[in-house]
Length: 132
Image 1 (tube, rainbow, N blue to C red):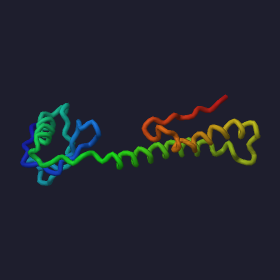
Image 2: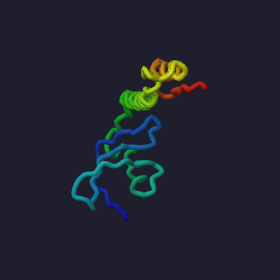
Image 3: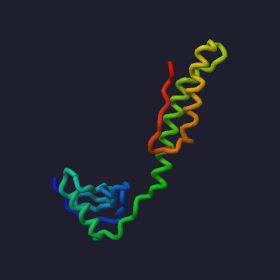
Image 4: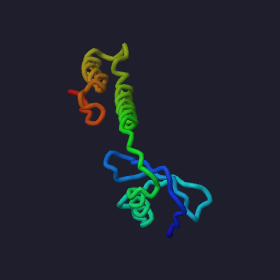
């Protein structure tokens, strides 16, 4: 279904690669303005058209991608995954668990807690493996 674009505004790059642009678009076919992400490889021709028109400056200057927000989101995602792994091994440190099992998990759990101190955190986390 072809969409007719009345206008678009507030263009913002979605990523560092600058191959996607978020816009607020008013299509003739809808009463309200809609958020839309335009890309050069969109399946719909109006998506590619919006992307090219945004790049040309037709909808105003494109706001740069905010890498600091991306970094904070990525850090939170890694910490969440790390916390889930810690939670899944909490049982190993209970008082009634044999020392042999506790000791097996102590180093693994410490490596999980140390993930935020890794030099490549949060982009390239080296996830510890449980040693047998």
